[in-house]
Image (tube, rainbow, N blue to C red):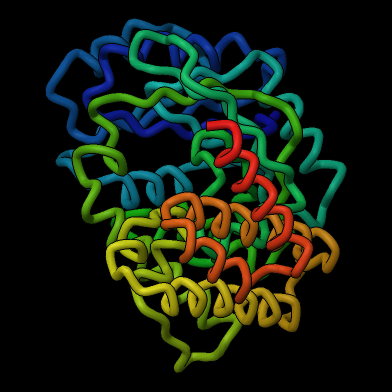
Length: 337
């Protein structure tokens, strides 16, 4: 009988955390899976560690040379013999019921192409860093600007992923795939923490290839915006970075009118999203997600401005009640100094 799903794990010089990652999959409550491990030219003891396991569910392949993450994942998708594929990274830890819960969701929701989960962020020593919990209904709106989905938390349908071309980007490959899936199929995030995501000094997107990933994500965000606002749509890079919650480029311009224009442009983008048909579009959640994003941006930027500019910004962007509230807070701080 064919297994119910494939767990796909690319491996590259992962000896430090590899055994813990492998064990977390082999100890799942759901047992009926192929565990597809592909080594991408490791020069450490990763291969020896993998070969020390005798579990019959493990299928091990080695690339003749280093192909990179996207090509290795695409190879794994082609090798997978099941309808469902769960992604896993060689330095993370899946919780015991992860596969069971995600497979159940996909099987009972045939219109959904990909399901993810919350993640608990840990450091290299396994110590708690933070807990990320973003509501599933807010993911669609925010995926326009930021990849909120942790790659090793996802399980997807093989046919759907192949339909959108699999992994097509050299950098920020997960953001690209999730976006392409979200244009054609419904995606969902389970409101449960099912994985420990490890931040390490060898992280490609945070350390080793940070600049390349940043540039790729800027281009992806602009492409995403054009999906909603038209192929000729363009905005300054400082606006894109602000929507990605990197506020320094916009603040460095030291122009209040640019901040106002940036926030008003976000309002236009939100309306464009609401006007574009999509299998993930639900109007009320999009409006709520946009409200939270707008409030967060305004709150952060006003806190970086001198008092007079702060009040001028609120006057141009907020309601009269918000302005009065800010004035009261400011006066209280002045009186009690």
